[in-house]
Image (tube, rainbow, N blue to C red; front, side):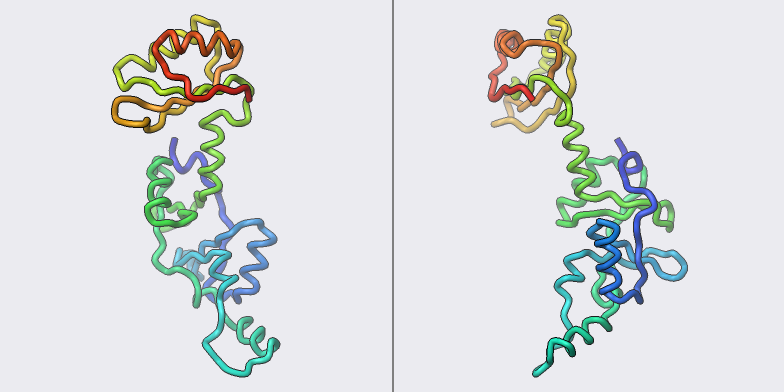
Amino acid sequence: MLVGERMTKRPITTHPDTPIEDALKLMRESKVRRLPVLDKRGKLVGIVTEKDLLYVSPSPATSLSIYELHYLISKIKVQEVMAREVITVTEYTPLEEAALIMADNKIGSLPVMRDDRLVGIITETDLFCIFLELLGAREKGIRLTMLVPEQKGMLANITREIAEMGGNIVSLGTFVGEDPTNRLITIKVAEVGEGELVSAMEALGMEVVDVRES
C-alpha cells in the first residue's frame, strides 16, 4: 500500500504571514493539528503544528501586563515559529517507509509532494487507522495471537488448516517474536468456533498466547 492511497488530499494550509492566532483558529475549525505553510506561489516553505502555536511567546520582557503580552503574541506570524526544514514523501512512497520516517524523526506528519507541488499529507492518525484496519479491529471474529516457529511453510499451514475448517481469515499480522526462532502472529478468523480454532492451531505446534472474541 502506498501513501497516495491513504493520504488526506487537498490538505488545509496556511501562509507565512498569517498571524498565529488565525492559524490556531483555522486548526480548531478544521480539526487538524498541523498546517503545511505555502508561499504566494504555492511552494511549500514550512510546516507549523498546534504545539508550535500554543507554546509560542514573545521575546523576554519585564513588567508586561496580560493585555500587552496578548498584543505582542497577536503580532507574531506563522513564519516566526514554523519548521522550515520539512521532510516530505511522494504519493508512491510505501506506507511502512513513511511510518519509519515519522518514527525515526519523531514527527507526526509528512507533506506529500508531486514534483514541487503539495498534493496531500499523511499523519500519525492515518497510520493508526491503517493499523486498526490491518488487525481487523472493526470486524467480528475470533482473535488469536500465537508464537509460530520461524520455518518455511508455517504460514501456509495455518491458512490451509483454517480454510479446511471453513473459517474466513478477516485479518493477519506478523510481528517480531521472542527470539529469532519464532514470530508472533495475530490472526482474526470468522465462521469458526473458538475451541475448534485453538485446538487446530495447537495441533500444528503453535503456542497460543492469547485468544478472545471481538
